[in-house]
Image (tube, rainbow, N blue to C red; front, side, top):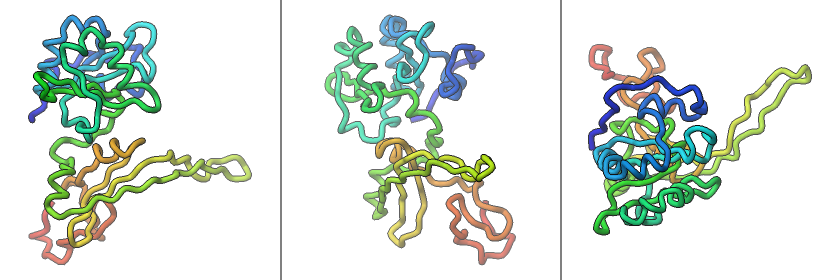
Length: 239
């Protein structure tokens, strides 16, 4: 599904929290719940066509997490088959409740919206869309597994960070995270994703694009692995 963009990117509102700036720059300012309800048919159709609509519980007084949600295409959800389901007609009058279920920290879950029992779009916590890889570089988990690949999941406890006796930072803190790694049948790692949950790690599972390969020795890829074509003459090395 080809994504469409807002006709013109408006200036980022001054009250947008920093964590949402990237999304506002990409998809436009958030709308309130009442506006989303009024324009329900329009925003649902936009999501079906690949456009995200950001929705804030209160766009003037309460802009902080977890009050922002996103009405988004289904491909922005890692495992929609395991998510709660709402008919579109039922979700509209209870939109605030649906958004709360999607964004409640720390156990919010994407909410799938259906038309005639067919899933069409999803309401998700807006922060899950931050730093998603481009669609052309994401790995289709189902297709990859059917083709003989494997995906392993790990939990990284992170690191609290440390300082020197003089108080200088010795190691920056590393947050806890889930890590998904995709490997071909021969064991070579071809993709990686990470996030605050297993679903987010799978949603961010991606292949490094060709431009991430180093053009200088040792010609490694985006994961630090040697390029498979390093023994080729320079004129035939692919970028």
